[in-house]
Image (cartoon, rainbow over all chains, first blue to last red; front, side, top):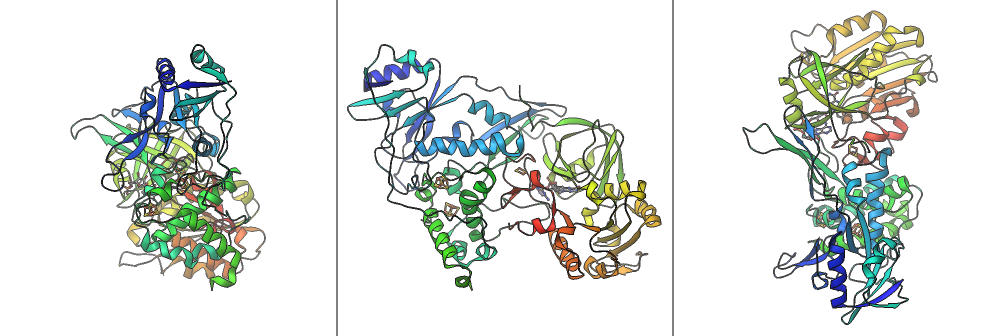
Length: 341
Length: 265
Ligand SMILES: Cc1cc2nc3c(=O)[nH]c(=O)nc-3n(C[C@H](O)[C@H](O)[C@H](O)COP(=O)(O)OP(=O)(O)OC[C@H]3O[C@@H](n4cnc5c(N)ncnc54)[C@H](O)[C@@H]3O)c2cc1C
Ligand code: SF4
Ligand code: SF4
Ligand code: FES
């Protein structure tokens, strides 16, 4: 079912939905950006269409809705671990096709890997319905088409935002009631981006040859990458975390176990007691990340982890291009072993 | 209602035995039997969590031998018998015990690496008819760090046992000094088909010891190692232990060396 709504009508719809759902969308946070006087766009709860930033790509991904930056796992005293209560309200999340496909990568880790489900992730994930934001144009650094992540049919509702009015497609019958008396019927269906300026050739090798792990191509990142981890924190598919215990105060016997986002680019990710660690060079960390995104994950789950949202390239303070790195890798592999000596 | 795999359960400590000045063996009451080579996530509320291997299995109890090196591993040493210790697990794949039967077993272990292989030795000590022979090759940093002294005295009666220390001192009663790799050639291997070599220790020790056995004619598929990586979950979610397309907590910690060699950090 399709509909065309004015902005006012859309706000009436959001108001009705907000009675039953937490509504998350990309919103502007002024002057918090990477450079002075720039804004960041990140997810938060919204109630008005004017708050939703649909004209630009969000700086941070919507993964925060199901994978908060820090999350309490347990409250404890010396004798017991108690799980925190979770908000049971269902959620609607406004997001683009690449991000919907990104959630499928997160699901692989949190709901499938090792045959166990992460209960904290599952509780949040189960409540989420997707509202697709149609992309009008491909943004800087996007390469969703190369990753096959430009399209999706996994959404409850799809929305084309416009200055004049808003078109929507409704797929989820549970949401139909909210639209009964608003807008004009039509047969709107969302369009998907068919071409990006950036094209990435993902190597199609069955096995990475040994020599590529230490190839000179990684050396440039040893110095250029400053191991800040921004590529990981903005990525919709990075899922790693570290658990730690926190005490509320020194004398107090109570505290909590939390998990916080972890980043494979940042020092200490592999450190073990006694100071032993792996991948000391930042180039090796770049190689580890790139291989995970377009090789290791696919080997394990039959699907690439990366969805080509381009946020890593948007946000790297050193202007390192991950998409370009994949193309360099593909060329190196084609040149073959001979070129590496 | 699904299971919370991150939730630790309390287990009662039965006894604590001092092994060296930094290591103790904690015996705890246990209602299930893990596979030899698996590990648990050991928790102390308010301090943290860490992966620890099983160093002994009995009916109704488990042993864990823990070296005090950091926050959690030091804090567990303040526990007393009767206290609770929190665990979740067992995790990982464990050693291929059935595949070892009927074969000549060679075990090379360094330092803390002796803990996870201790239950293998005890198993075949109690069932020597299940294997053709066993050689034990242990390396420790110095005489004060030799683990499981009384057990080793017992094992010596049934199995060829070589103990070496990196640095000797006046109290060292043994005759062997130097790295484990130097003693590999003393192990006699009559049949290179019907055998398994198990190597557990620090990464460098495992690498060079494996290479030494390979130099002496052992195929890399006949070598088994147990890998150690940073771990924050034990259940394939936190990503810290990932190497290549493998997760050490799920697909390991035990790997055949021909497979382990393919995993580049
Ligand atoms: C599969 C496996 C089996 C192990 N078996 C034993 C054993 O039987 N006996 C024993 O004494 N030690 C064992 N270890 C090492 C033990 O886990 C570390 O010594 C312990 O994590 C140190 O924690 P800490 O809080 O005391 O140290 P800190 O240095 O304070 O560590 C802080 C955090 O870093 C992480 N970390 C640090 N070192 C390691 C490490 N080596 N491996 C994994 N994570 C680490 C932990 O998440 C820890 O919470 C094993 C490790 C693994 C992976
Ligand atoms: S690796 Fe980069 S392009 Fe791929 S999903 Fe993550 S942020 Fe997006
Ligand atoms: S690649 Fe860029 S964003 Fe990522 S850690 Fe290195 S410097 Fe930071
Ligand atoms: S320890 Fe967390 S993924 Fe293996």
